[in-house]
Image (cartoon, rainbow, N blue to C red; front, side, top):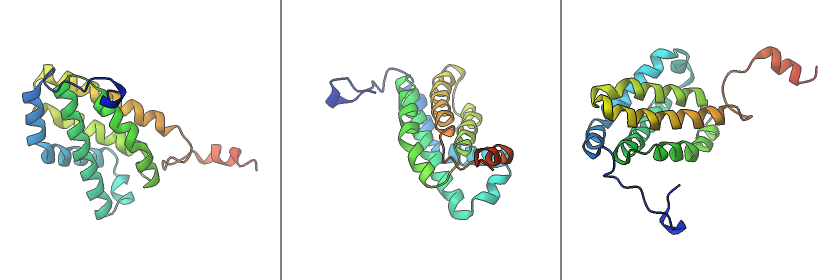
Length: 160
């Protein structure tokens, strides 16, 4: 992770596609809304799990993730999305948000991005989304994730 106090240089935000990053930021709210719609369509049970306030939280989270993807595209480096996913996974676990829902948001962003990006620019965004999904999948395996568990395995683990 690049951090000035560690002696490492900051990311060069002109190394990648800064104009594409500006387009992502300009369409950020629209991309976040589309990503949430795709995630809700992919998993209809999300509508039951989240009330209106919960869906607004997910919309805000999607817009923050879109901002991190814009940073990935500007720097042509997937580390901003990876770092963001690492920082936010404990917050989502505390809010009882399953990591699968965050993975669905990332996939929704992946579906929404071709409307504002060219294919070459899409590769940088896809690399950032892949890093975020990888982190969320890793945190998914930890105990305490809010996803639906296998009832038979839960029965066996209780030792009954």
